[in-house]
Image (cartoon, rainbow, N blue to C red; front, top):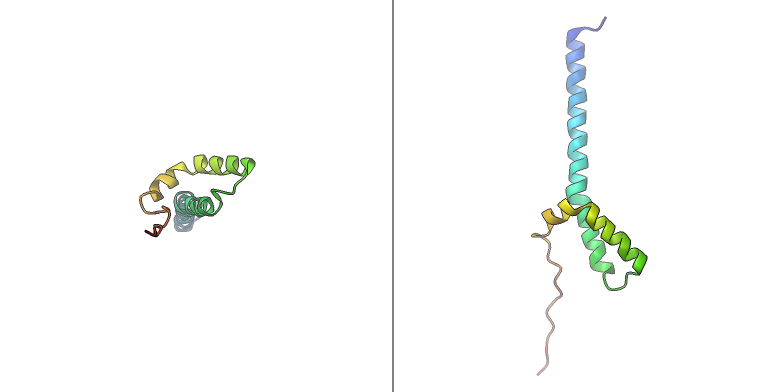
Amino acid sequence: MLDINTFISTLEIDTLITALLYLVLSATYLLVLPSLIYFYLKTRWYVAGSVERLLIYFMVFLCFPGMLLLSPILNFRPKRRKLEA
């Protein structure tokens, strides 16, 4: 027969593991994957082929909430050019 104290301590550990798993998965979905996609886009934007571009667009669509979350922070505008007069 299962003791009630053992059941409660097991339930708390399982709940903690579940909460930690949700936290890790949500951080990965909202922060890690979109940041990797942003940096990949920065390096491959002008040289990507058609199939690669299709996969990039799919990944952007898949991680769209995270892309919106990171978009105000990241700035990938080109550097200023020096014009000679």
